[in-house]
Image (cartoon, rainbow, N blue to C red; front, side, top):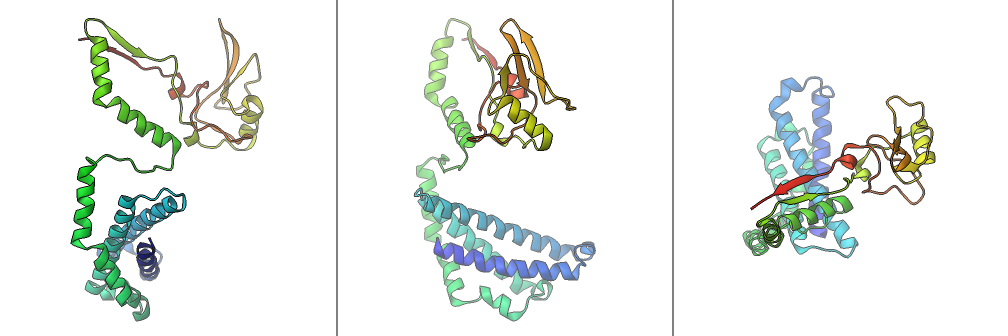
Length: 273
């Protein structure tokens, strides 16, 4: 990853200088309509460099965690090379528009940068990556760095597999097959944080959960963040809406028991054959 990191750091330095120069020319963006061609060009290049930076950083995090992925490393180097090459080419073609000094531009014109770009965009390297993708049938097994996203991908893989649908077909032959559940789950790790009095109330009332047994105070908040329910199963106070809050040990990323849509939504699928 050292080569990819070196490339993208050099490209980012030049992009930052170009953005600063363009901000000065356009009066902080107020006169951007008078420079639409270069604005579009620079925005696209800056986006490419940022995307390459994120990919290289992702590959570095995998390596640091002992989960290096050869395909990701190759993608990172190839894209860092492509983004840096695109930036060099654009500066050469529209030198006057970028507003760079010679020393900054020279950052992308060293022998090391040129050799790194050639290595990254080597035809055989790119072809090898393509062959690897074909061998893997294009399946995505990369580390997602997110528990809920990984769970979602694994569930999608299982529910779209031939074995699963062969099993469903067997069960549905000659009978009505109903697939349902008793409740849904919410990806509460993605919920916004409840701050201030609302956060304090929810933490005190529900701790790290989404419901509390018995009769309790629902709070003075509008819209409400808790609702009292009395049912044949007894009285319960339930959290309302898409909120999470700080709690000892951390708030769960996937849970149920409250009154957000996904927590109360139950699937009902009927299949016959």
